[in-house]
Length: 284
Image (tube, rainbow, N blue to C red; front, top):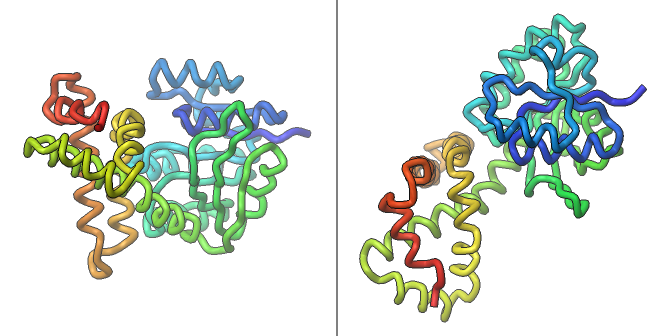
């Protein structure tokens, strides 16, 4: 018998993971409930089966992978808990979302209380692509070795420990050094442009920190496109750090920046922040 995997949802990461699994012979299903036309197109391109409802989604599944924006992680787990239990509880639920250890522990608790298998996972890197690239999907929890068996289907799944929360902690620490840095660069670019010193700022960055501004400008379209989900990730990093440990307020500020960038992107190209960023399209 082959492996059956339910993957929710069909964003760039979810559809990339699904495509890799299908390519290696797994049966992959998804739900398009509440999803966009773009998600439906990604599911079709990945060769994924579309489930008629949540019961159909998890029926006979060996694994259920949750790959959604951080704010939706708890909602999806709560929604699928009943169907997984009703299907006999054989599926391993894998939370692959960018959430704090405290959040994943709370999501895991009802599964553990019901005797259902739960894995904490943190994805580091971009989606799998046709070149063969894979992100690392770090896993922790008692059932992490079961999930790691999907390494045989083209994924890269290092097992960290048997503790729920370790994979999410690693993800939070790593994301703080990548998406957190993106937020710092965006904020300073906007600040310099608003103050009328964009050209001087760009010149000094090129002279003293070669490549950093160029990288920020190159990555800006991706940052803008993903800002709508990165705000929640910054809030989760703030929770991970905890106020008493210091640094949490910095990431709450990054969350606010990403929220505003997402609003601006939705409002159109004439919004203030997007107009200010145009000063850096060709940094000198």
